[in-house]
Length: 270
Image 1 (cartoon, rainbow, N blue to C red):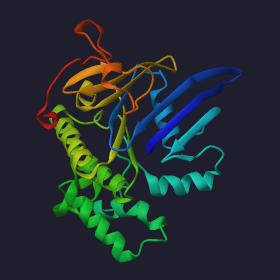
Image 2 (image 1 turned 90 degrees about the horizontal axis):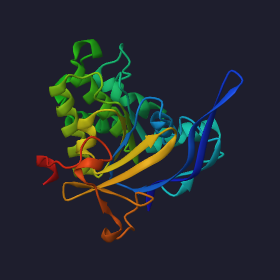
Image 3 (image 1 turned 90 degrees about the vertical axis):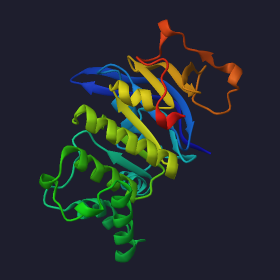
Image 4 (image 1 turned 180 degrees about the horizontal axis):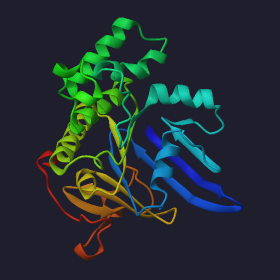
């Protein structure tokens, strides 16, 4: 089953009387459990693509499938319910509610879930705060936490709904180098241990270096697709599907990297 499938998607915006085509003829599919980076220059359309996958926005034309279910044509309430159950979000600015504790912030998206009892909510909150290493900070408010700890709370909040996908928009942008590395390693461990699908919109070379899939967007179109095999990047012919044979992949040479990183080994990729 493909966790996301995008078919002939275009997205237009109106700026005054001028139509701007943010995305053109996007076709993609990928499986559950990927750690995927959407890269590209500012204004390329990568955040627009992330918002479409997250059902925050809707395409002008084409179809988007989440867990093989067509989400095109759903009402705003139906999309909100889908997000509440299937899609977790991690934001550059954390987006924590300042008057709530860490535990209350993690619980907040669960309050709209009538299928969960109070005890079940508390169990999830405790579990995912433990997963991100904040069991001793449950009562702290955001202004009592460091930037890295706030992002850990945001990760726990995203995981608490037990989503099919976690979408992260520049999750390391507001963190120092060391903290950003720690957050990336944490998300990679969660990806490996829980099988959670992570999709990033990013400029950060460190995120791309940790990814096992890459989409390069330029001028609203897919410029390159990359897949990491045995610590090397390979270009993929036309989609991020496991159905491709290994012979379909073209090794990326040092002078033609799909992104800034061509080769690289990290301890978590061994």
